[in-house]
Image 1 (cartoon, rainbow, N blue to C red):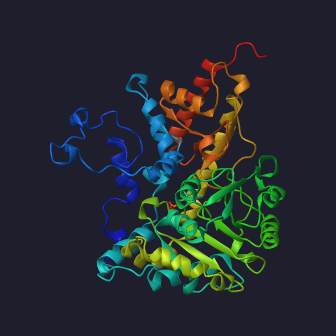
Image 2: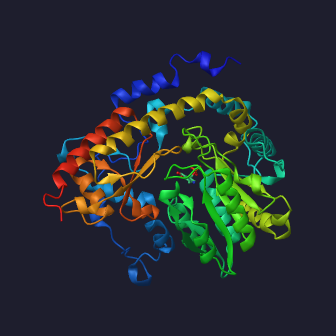
Image 3: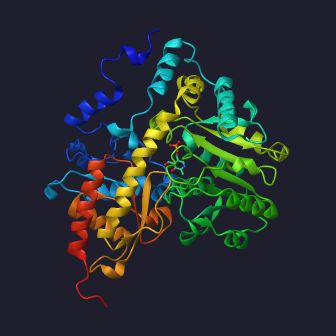
Length: 470
Ligand SMILES: Cc1ncc(COP(=O)(O)O)c(C=O)c1O
């Protein structure tokens, strides 16, 4: 078969650049200001003119309302609603991160070819087992053994395929939920952890991260929070949104605390290919002889394909603890009643993981490093926003908001709402992530957008600066 790369007239980058010149990416999560208006909305009614009182007997379930209210998408939608045509500036969506919509962040041609080959093979049209197809599970086990040199070698049985890392999180919360169980999570966290906890009725308790100690985990705080019903602690490494990468020594201490408390560690390593600083990534799984570890991963971030929706749960079960405690069974049972990742992607995964070249990751990380250098420097012109440490991983900059320098801004939400209204610039209020009066911005965008965003931030700061400092 002729490789896809030779058949194409334009490379993906060229195709997408051409598209980008004429119009925004179709999936870019911003309103177009030209929404399809539903004229019928005004006429909505509960009456049907039939028997039984003449009203429709069904209505939407409110169970997900509370869980969704803490989600990032809900907040971003509110902020996009504040943007307006009248500002006469394009909308800059730096509140969330999806680099894949920008031409400078294309996925690898090797990964594209793997998916095309899988599609054309005719072997990937069937349903898959709940735990995933064997070639995909084996490929993930081999990949983890190869990349991270794990002392206890992973086997295909230790891997479960999921619909992105999100389904891994959801599965674990459901599989571990018990009447009184609680799970410790960092205050600063990917908000879906909060949503899934609410939805699965698991109590969560939040431990602090220490900004002045490179966002290390406050392990004394962890011990103080735990009780006899604590079953797990979640760590995010590399950490979104702080951008730090934990050291070997710190992770070892995490494992020792977990052992002391009799709990497992759930390590979300979804960003482990997005590292551009000095600290080397250390997988939590290497400490599984101290405490049992479940690792969550996916190709969404490293391969810049969050829309492909494929990830995994990996059991680092050194002493067979997960088997004897029925955790493995419970995960399998949950996956048997959940939707599976597409078989096409599962079938393509071995080639995606094996054939993608190191240079692909290096190129992306080099763009991110340049963007973060630029953004970190540009912050100097906006004194109300400071960042304790330059990120060395992931795709964000988290900044502390100094409200004492601003005239009429009451908190991080107010800051982001006014910024969206006045500048059509959307950033994420830290409160959504658990850090009140901080603001997060994405650096995984085209460089010109980042430059424009900082110009607007500068203008905004100048308009809102407190004239008489108290
Ligand atoms: C820390 C963290 N975990 C998990 C996810 C979700 O990953 P996926 O897109 O593979 O479901 C994200 C997405 O931003 C994340 O930041």
